[in-house]
Amino acid sequence: MPPEYVMQGRFSEKSDVFSFGVLLLEVAWKLWREGDTWGIVDKVILESESYSKNEKEIWRCIHVGLLCVQEFAKDRPTMPTVVSMLNSEISNLNTPKQPAFIQTPLITQDVEDRFSLSYVTLTDFGGR
Image (cartoon, rainbow, N blue to C red; front, top):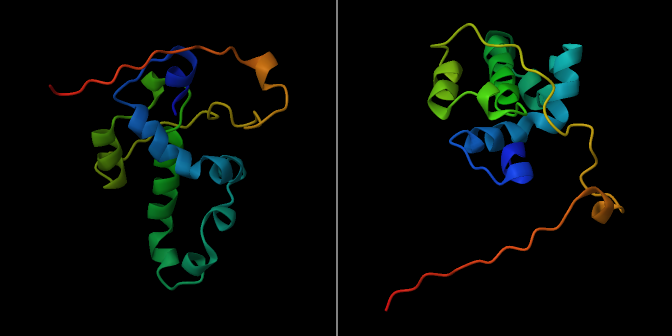
């Protein structure tokens, strides 16, 4: 879930963009900063003949994925923009910032100390 939804309960048109980018988050950020394409891309792809021809496209996909997981919704592209970026219709891509929560452990023993619980009422609408 995007940070603005988790922290403030706000859903935006860019929430799906965030989810798309999360697919690359854990592995790609560290390797992206180090310039390590070898660590990001599967060995099968690296060993293929087409890798050298497609290396620029592979980096573009990683770059776009990282733009999709920016902490603030205003910094994320829209899905139509993502498609244009992936199709190389947009060539000048912003430099990604460090994604939100990348260094925060997902599960901790002191969860109750770090987060507050919100009790929510759910209403189910049914036909007559």
